[in-house]
Image (cartoon, rainbow, N blue to C red; front, side, top):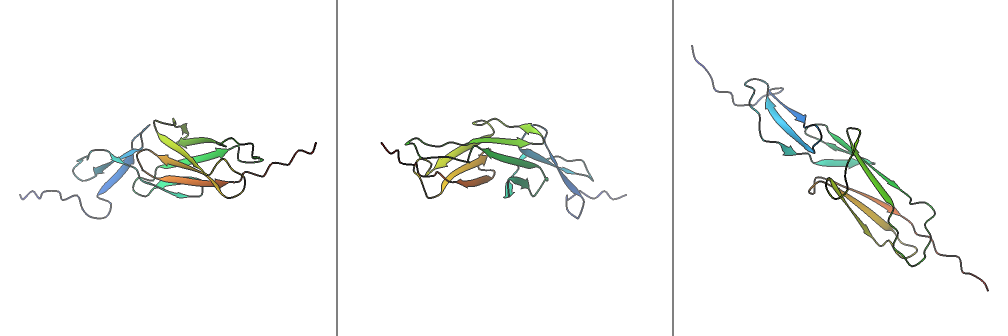
Length: 136
């Protein structure tokens, strides 16, 4: 009897499974059961949902408070919520938020949400309206 070493190749030989409560997935060979170290999911966004092309995991970004923003000399920082598999993620731990051009009226103010350590970014523009001059 000849035993052939598994080379982990071929269609349907290996599978990727998302690791629960983590932004990683693990590759497993269905033939020999070898598992690899967890790998970061890399999210590609279409609309507000980012999907990992390898394991199929998804993260959804919701930006709130972008309507009716009026210039008052302060930076505008709309709220951001990110969920993955129905669980709300933690800003600073699971994702970061950066704002740009978010103080002055006109132009495009921007909020950028980055999942994990550069695992994918979502960008949304919002508008700050000009203040109505007060007539004395």
